[in-house]
Image 1 (cartoon, helix red, strand yellow):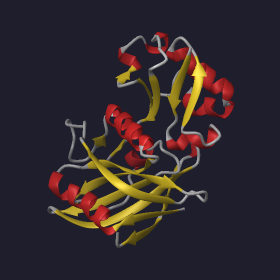
Image 2 (cartoon, each protein chain N blue to C red; image 1 turned 90 degrees about the vertical axis):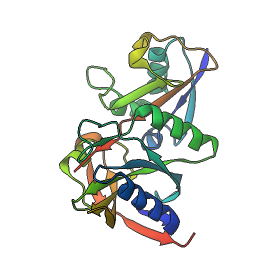
Image 3 (cartoon, rainbow over the protein chains, first blue to last red; image 1 turned 135 degrees about the vertical axis):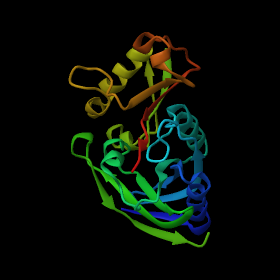
Length: 146
Length: 92
C-alpha cells in the first residue's frame, strides 16, 4: 500500500506541528482509495486536540469533528484516508499508545517529529489487520508537486 | 422507516465497499442490528462478544453522540443519518 500526497499538503501538516509546538497537533487526511488499496490524499483538515490534560504527548480528535469531516468528504465523493499528528521533541515513529488507539484499518497514520519548534521528519504508517491483531507497517509515500 | 448509515472507510470492505447503507429501523439500535444482519462480517468489528458496542466505536445520530441521547433506544426519522466513527487518538 502507498500514499500519494502533494508537497503543499505535506508542508501544511508539518507546519501545523510547528504551530502547536510544544504540544501535539492532529488532523485528518481526506482523499480516495484505489482498487489496490493505495491512497491519494487531497485535503488535510487540521483538528483540535481534546487532550488538554496532556497535549505535549497525547492527542485525541473529537468524534463530532470526524463525523463532520466524514460527511463533507462523502458529499464531495471522497473519504477519510488517514490522519496525522506530531511528536514534539520525539522521533517520527509510532508508539505503543499510537497503536493501541489506532482503529482505522487500511488508513495512513503520518507522524512528524518537531524538534525545538521545527518539523524534521515525517513518516507514514498504514494500519493493518483486525483490531485484535492490528499492526503498523511502514508506508511508501509518493510526494507529488501538486 | 428507511434510514441511512454512513460506513467509515475501514469498515467498507465488510459492507460490500459501500459508503452508505440504508436500513429500516425505528431506533439506532434497530438500525445497527439491521446493518449487521445485512452484512454479518461487520458484527465483530462493531460489537463485543457480549453484543455491546466496542469501546472505540462512536455512533452519532446526525451531530449527536448517542451516548448523550437515548443510546440504542434513540428514535430515528427518515431525514436522520447515523454515522459510525472509530476513535482517533494516540501520542508519543
